[in-house]
Length: 320
Image 1 (tube, rainbow, N blue to C red):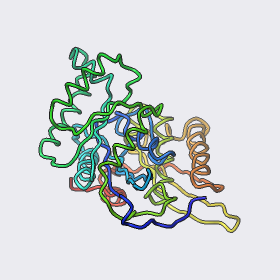
Image 2 (cartoon, rainbow, N blue to C red):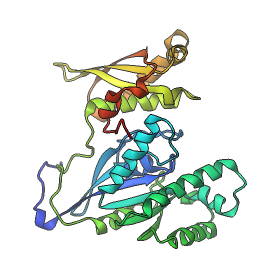
Image 3 (cartoon, rainbow, N blue to C red):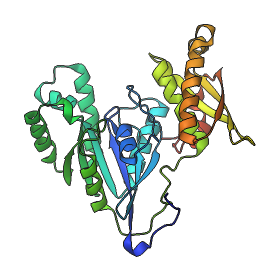
Image 4 (tube, rainbow, N blue to C red):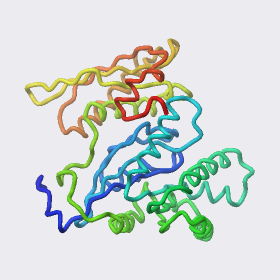
């Protein structure tokens, strides 16, 4: 069993690593895999992560604090601008940046720019490069999803991007399968500064439980609902009560942006809301290692994206 002792600072390393990249490049999957458990929500929809989530892993004598940042993209509305500003904010203060790239997608772009979707993905990578032009710290390129690309194309992509001059090293990984991640851990530790650990040995995340619970439910909203609704939805934990039997009662509200979306979120006979609540509760029980009684309600808040509290609670800059 692990203890909560923090080793002697003269023999340890500790540092921050910011995971940056375009939406849906695999950043959250990478963070969860490096840590060994899920702390950041993952869906097949872009822009899932809305604020920096910190996860922690230990490799040999190094404690590494990973910052899973929102994707860097062309943002036009307030929430998007705050997310992008938060991503670069996390990168600025880190000891190391890892730029995660969807290797198969970018490889296709380099060979042919005929597909509109690929152009958009490549534009997001170039947007990261614009930010890196003035960055003076260490950056590693992580070519992700390498199991989905032919090796000659992968090596061409690695050579092309390394020659841009932004990166100290290039790593080829599959965040989903875990291939290449042990080598990545060792490479990360090489860049970590000598110093004391910031967290106890058995802590794997720096995220308030109330906020983590809200994120778990928001993930289920993304997975269940489609079209524009997930991007107009927000989940807040209104009440958290620890019961004498060791269980916890959690009251949450799912806020939607329009009156018409409320019926969609609830579903016929409450079926959709029941599915979201049931799957969120199950994951909370596993994550919190206790029985969870979840009560989820749906309300309309037409301008929740314009509410400063929503941003402040998540460490986002309302005025970005």
